[in-house]
Length: 152
Ligand SMILES: Cc1cc2nc3c(=O)[nH]c(=O)nc-3n(C[C@H](O)[C@H](O)[C@H](O)COP(=O)(O)O)c2cc1C
Image (cartoon, rainbow, N blue to C red; front, side, top):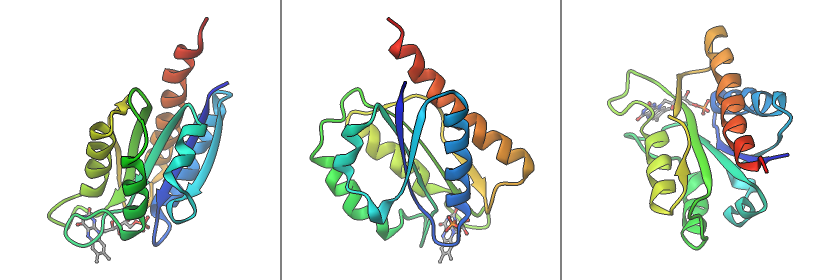
């Protein structure tokens, strides 16, 4: 059984709601999902898992929230080469750089050697009913892509 950690930053709850739905999707495949707020998680814990999903809202002018700074610094010191990952988050299309923090997280993961197994999931504000389905599918497809790795 794959073990997946989902680490997220959420100020007003939108990214948190996505994270919870994604966790449901992961668990629907029989994989295990642990949900952590980034401020409560040191990146070294990633290495206890088969793969990670990172989520963030976007702040300022297309910036990653400050809560992610320490975590990203900690990731620099890890060997993430070949580690499987994907990213998600909430934003607002009225801003110039829609969900730019999600793209930044993906870029950082790539820099540190992780393999991005599926495209990012971006949602404006909280997920609507269709997007809730997409969140669950995002988690399920991520877990299924790892399941294939565990075949003998
Ligand atoms: C000061 C401020 C700056 C923001 N900057 C951006 C931005 O550059 N790009 C974007 O897509 N959304 C931006 N947002 C919108 C938030 O990312 C959006 O409200 C999101 O749903 C918040 O997610 P959360 O509920 O998980 O905290 C900004 C919001 C605030 C209050």
